[in-house]
Length: 189
Image (cartoon, rainbow, N blue to C red; front, side):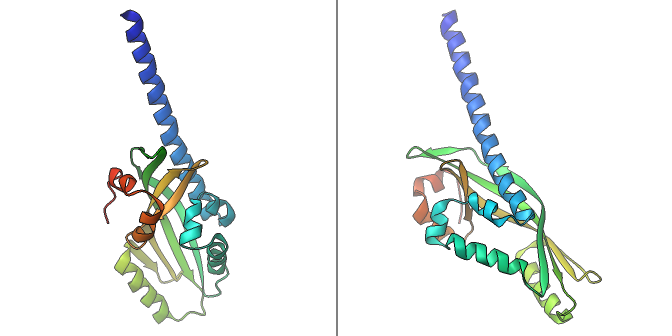
């Protein structure tokens, strides 16, 4: 009986360590993605995306091009900084594939160049305020800042990969992952 108890304790501790490692792997993957976005290393950032995203929503080349166009915008400078993970769900397994739901936050700043009229900047600020929280505007710097929460589904596919999730993307996401995974992750629309 003593041996059975020892074996059970050992198996429980091993499974706990594996679960901790898996959760840690999710955090490492999403953190690497966020840091790559902050330093504008978009190739690396996109390496963390689930490949089906590029097949269904936007090609990797097109996505990379849009990110680079934002960087080369002659009217503004956009930055993500101080990104952090808000929450990581429990991992669920459906059809031998593991999933988790992650919410993360980025501090976004948009600095407008002097060539942009003040009315345009204020209009953009109003548009952002309609969708985001904690929006501020520094008139002297011509900078709008806010915190953006983003959600994603992490999928274990040759390492943990992220699939952006929002109400707008929900119909596409449902074609990429099983309904059972969405239900088990308690994702609401």
